[in-house]
Length: 280
Image (tube, rainbow, N blue to C red; front, side):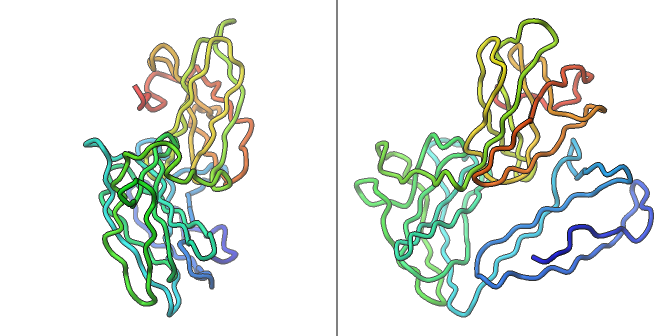
């Protein structure tokens, strides 16, 4: 959305003070959904944002459209009272283009602009362990048509009951990976749970390790900004991928790329510095 990467504040801004800033952005020519992430930076070059741990990014959401663009909307359901975060996929059957939409926890509906065509609509939870979609009586994704200048409604992502193999698997090129080495303040490395926190939408991903495992890999992460914390002793003892002052380092996950060297080896932060294990 343009070449601007940094915008200076107009003057020193004190805690509690408000200031207006602006940046010129150029809407892309190709109709699609675009998101730009922004954070603040102090005089030492350290990035920070908002939220309890000052690590959430500000973002700009842009949908571009042309005269032929149309829309699709529907409900989000799940076979429990809790709707998890998931990735919704709209697959154009005319050119096989896959459009991905992030669905947040407890989001009950969606509505997006998209070009006319014949589509399939399906979703996968963030761990890619359960797929559902807008389906026929056999639980296969059911084609539907989007007409120019119109919004197709009722494309509900509510069938999560099909057998494995009926919902198309997510495209692995759309996801990224985080990896790193492990350590512990003793000669023995216990079994750990490594959790990656998406600082934009509050979702999290995790992987468990075994005793004395010296590295980890978190796959199938949706693109975005993350922090990483390792937990031992049923989540009561935490080590973070952090700076010298114990503040968590933010990593950007890029589709198709492995972010290496993300080592959650800071086990010396005061109690309560890192977020509690959300998985237990």
